[in-house]
Length: 270
Ligand SMILES: [Zn+2]
Image: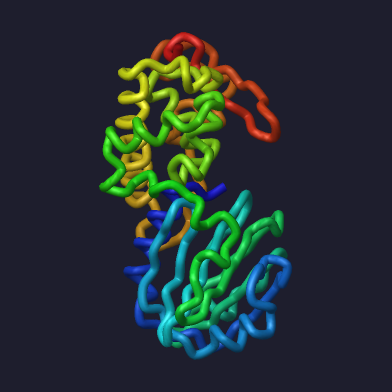
């Protein structure tokens, strides 16, 4: 599933390759993804608008269009963007296809149909997107200092992994990178937040910044100008259950918690 580093790289690729391009044709494959407005309005409104800029906030990728409109995409579990040729065969589970004025398509596929798209016109506000305005600062926000991180985390009482993936704390972390950050900070995922020492919270803060930035650098180097970067072989613990820890050789643990699996090393994390 796409998480912050994937979306950050996608944003950069799109800014490099599609800024200024105009949407000539809109095809909606799966209207259920469109949370607002309806499919017909969505298609009509997008046609003939141009891409002004692409940005990211938390787990949302945002297409800023001209004349002014903003398309917010939350990829959830299985959303994927692809740059393709209009003549490429259509795959199943097409969410939308925009044909652009450079004879290229940008296509969104969603094997689980769980993604959520919101088109905000002109001065419509993000309060129309459920829970959007409740999010904390983006995990890579330069204003998210250690002090701010410390103050914010005090308000959350759950186990630390659940705090990290709570978008109200900071925006952008999901299951995979929460596992990676906890590993880098040497903290076990099921510790209650209130049991963490000052130095553990500091370690989590610096791990958040460094794990995300390293992942962005790795994914970016591999992706070039494509949007194909689902490989996550560079992760240390997430998805590595029953493999050996790269630091100490202990078998990586897998513990199911709700619908998610937590991966961690019992030796390296405490
Ligand atoms: Zn280990």
